Image 1 (tube, helix red, strand yellow):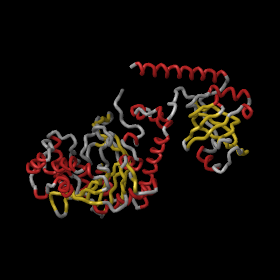
Image 2 (cartoon, rainbow, N blue to C red):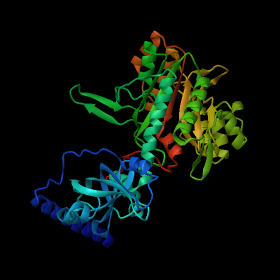
Image 3 (cartoon, helix red, strand yellow):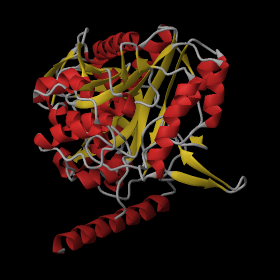
Length: 496
């Protein structure tokens, strides 16, 4: 408690000192919050352009550069300026600036945003620098930054004050730049494959398309309850019915009212896509080729390191049936076990509680999660899921208890869920009714009946493969980030 009070007292004193400097600056007739600055180059470009400039050499090349002061040395004679591309040193001397302008440097602090004009030189010690002739305060910072990288390590502070995290931690900036690049490369890949990007509603009358508990809201003008979407699936399939394109995708947010952990955030980014006239086999090839292509574009390799493990994203990826994978890791063959009670007995023998699993498929899913998932480190497609837990997937053509569904696992995580899509409206209604019964019995994650979607299917939807990919988890893997909060700029946090 005493440490907290001391930190607050220090913060208050620093802020008061900086506010006094604001007054001193205003007394000089200077606006400490400028409207603009004519910047014509960034730090990285300068470092690249003059990388061969020898130590002790000066040029007569003048530039205007702007950014944030992240270090001040020798009473302001040397400062480090950081912009979105990197850092460069500023050399400030009264011989170049004049006595009065040099004296005004004492009103600057670490964290201030400035613009400056000067020529390029390399110091005798080899540091590329701007020999400053003019400095303009663009924004006065009223709060002190952590002194160095290690000054902001508390995860609560890092996630709550991401703006500070981004300022002081270069690796965090690099992660979010890579995130942007990954999403761009995914979009480019799909467009190059002939996919059309579309947009569907975030507010749904029915929470469907996935087994998840929704967030609810209310529209006052219509006096109607609405759900924030848990998945765009049913609206995207409506577009497929309409024939806008045979290949469509959407990259956008989903919202699920669920727990928070290293892999889950209540709002997250999802890619969903659908392709007519193919089945789940083509979806497996698509994700393999897309993710390996993105890895090559962003990282230059398909062999990545994640938290000390080497993962090989090179296609093709392994395939295992769910029943086969369970048999491999438990020695139990569920293809010859037909009832929920028989399956539950086997689960009990494995030490797994399945009292809340109401059918054969849910029992298998629970066993798989506890006994198989942790072993699936290298990319693998787990195929042929039980029909009981796959309300939107087509029945398997060789086994009516199963569906043509797969989930891709990497590092033990689900990163993709895909189907040969269900196109039979009568079968779809029956499965929705099963879901509705489960919901009525207290399963908050079961889907509701979407009558309009069934109507759409009755007009006829072409055979299709569909897939949903968790973008945040892909970004985690490609940036070696141990938690989803590291790749979401503003993760959901508990109120203080």
